[in-house]
Amino acid sequence: MAEEHEPLMQALLALSACNMSRSLPEGTERGTGASHSHITYRPRRDYLLSSQHYYGSAVKQIARTITKGTSSDQSHTLMAMVLCCLFESAMGNFKGFACHAQGVDTFIHTHLTPISSDPIGRELTEAWVLAKYHTWWLRINFSSFSFQLSQGSLCLSPNILSMLRSINARRAILKSILCESYRLNNIALLQLGPSGIKNSEVTFDECLASLQTESKRLDEWHSTIPQSELPIESFSGFVDFEKEQYHPLVFKSHYFAMNYAYYVCSRIMQCTALLRELQSTRNQSFDPGRKEVNYWMTILARITSGLDKQDCFRNNVYSIGISSLLTACLLRCHNITIGRWIENLLYEWTTSHILEEGSFPVAQALQAVRLINEEKAADSDIYAIALPEDDGGGTGKFMSYHSQHFDEIVITGRRGMSGRLYSELVPINIEG
Image (cartoon, rainbow, N blue to C red):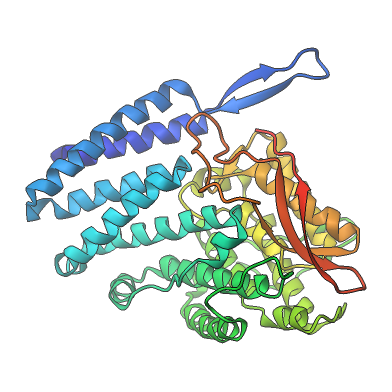
């Protein structure tokens, strides 16, 4: 197919070169003396330059094809446009992604009938939906509170949802539930914070009601899981808290394991008991809401224990990674044992030179987890993190594995036994 359509060929070459560039990092030693020097990694330059060349060519040829408006090129053109979205997402270029995203959205709705009746068109729509939710997840985690509060509904339109159901696109539907649940949970939580955090157009009670709706959607999704996609063994398994070990939950494939991780994360974001506890300003160490979150966090840790880190590195490039899932969920969990386990896992990844996973910098996730654990050790809990000023998602990862560069973040949480909600600016050190 690509050989018959030049824009598609150029887009494929751009994405392939981008993958090679990011999977084969080059190290540069910086500093003086053995005790002060460290190695800074960046994507391999020769593949990076090739990817930029092919990408520029693809964009130009896509524009020419759309201008011609030949219907026979619709599936080819849509495929090339989706590949460009994946390219920008992998590079952390959120402005570039937004530009392509608007183009894809317009293209799909302009040609909705032929695309929805074409098997390839439906598959491409699924790929586009997955890319959109993945990029939203990458963008939301380190943004300003005002940006987080401004996020509108992420629910799929009836036409798109119908298209996805016709091809049994279960992961795309699951990610829509995950991201919408995260959005609602975060907005509800931020409205309970100190007075310095602005209110959202959606009320706290409306968020909770919508979370109940998403919970029903998740029940429906889970009810359709084939037996072959569930864990190979029973959910009942030991947890050695003293050694901070979690008995692995093993699945038949990495894909199935990640799907279940998305499901568990969605459950954590739908735990409204924790939100009601915060609303009441009471500090209940044995509240049922905490027990529910801890239960699901333990399941998530066991799923993670069963994953191969190289599979995470290779297979999660265009999907929400386990490292950012763990970081987001830890903000809802009071259990410091789980927090330390996550911190040790991410640290081990960094020492193995896994620089990014799920297109998200592992070092950035590690520093956030360390900060969360430090607050837990001081008998406080962090529920939200943000940048003091929104940076639009950063400048892109063209020459590094970090899109963003900052040395302080805002945290919102609750102090120990007093139960007082607080918000403060704290330093953070992210090594790239």
